[in-house]
Image 1 (tube, rainbow, N blue to C red):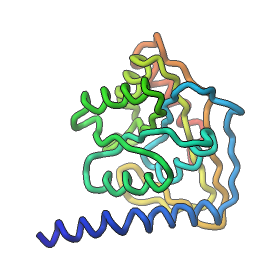
Image 2: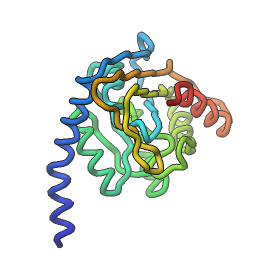
Image 3: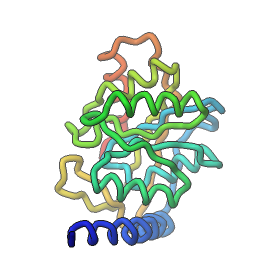
Image 4: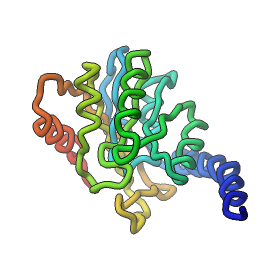
Length: 207
């Protein structure tokens, strides 16, 4: 009972605090956006490594002035915290993962793409292995003929957690470099070939 109450309070309070901290980190850092002039008007899959998820909303909002996206988030408690946090940035979510309800989540995501939403996904989430691309992003892109924009966020000053994904938290008063690829088309590629391409693009600017 006490655990349920504490979790309910956490879901009520922590996402708001987290959104303020993310905004503070963004405002106190210099920003450089290395992104294409345009990514077109068609729905896009935005992908970044799980450990760089924290500052993802800003590169999306830079590419799309009006947010119209759903982010795939783990259904676990930490995922619920993230889900409520990203909603402060105008982003919706789809709860699920590659380990749980994978088919249902994939169908939901593909329906959302067909309905005009962009999709945000961490190809190595929610539990890894770190920097290994799971099948889901490729299946989703190929089934809907949707292109993928690969996002890399490089902070000059950061804390790195001792978690499976080596989660990065930028420090204030540094510089944030946002990298986004031109839309990548994996249609017609073999699964392993497409996964290798996604990984290669995401590893271009490793910290």
